[in-house]
Image 1 (cartoon, rainbow, N blue to C red):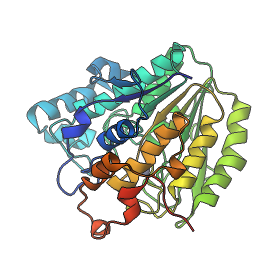
Image 2 (image 1 turned 30 degrees about the horizontal axis):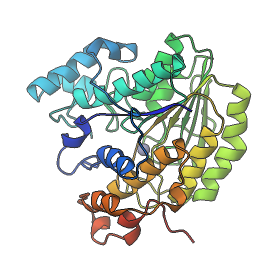
Image 3 (image 1 turned 135 degrees about the vertical axis):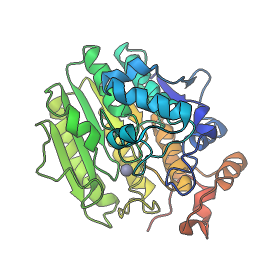
Length: 351
Ligand SMILES: [Zn+2]
């Protein structure tokens, strides 16, 4: 079983800016916690450099990629470009690494796809990926570069005949569906909260024919998620018989996450991921949404644990892990009182 964890130190220093929901540590705590637990063996962690601009043209327009580079270099762009590409507008702020940070996440997803194509890896983990709202010519919903779309296209370009994209983020994968749901070699499944931004992905919506959408009401818990995964998604994926799977494992559906009304525990979240890993196809596992730094670090560390056949359901923090979790900062009313489980163990207490 060959697996690898793709990351970069760029995720240590860069911030989206004050007040933005993504102005929290998300990737480096996962890397550090997995190291502290001894879950990353020698050679399994691979540092990734930002993608070259032309590599992003596989999904994005050259004009958009140039605008991102310009925004990074000058920390501003013209009004015309801002309006067209939504960079520096909506919730897509210009920050010092506005090109290099998303381009690194994208490079990791594309590299992961190449490793799977070459048969060098069975499972690749890129917690910085999963930015599924990005559009070819514009930023959307905190996503500047659509790394899942780039990974899918890398697999197709490499000769894949059937690619399954499964998305368990609390939000609909609108950027992926809008542009990649007509090709019979690609099929997309998304389970997300109903009536939640971007409000696309209704149950009857099949996009260009290849999308399958499932919605859950506010307050939906583990059993609701697992019912969709086990009764609807898994049989359909198995029938599709993919050569490769991309799992977008956004964890903003967890109860303690502020960006959705869903109420999964990380037990349900991990079970869902385990079912998909159990299909046993070469799989690229991505992050995605996750806006509570404590729950996100624990959920994604546990996700890597599952890939490594560890048992996150019973993993308590050792002193090093507790130190990492206790060091996380979160300017949010929910952080006024930090529950013991946020720093003392990977798993949620349930029941
Ligand atoms: Zn989300």
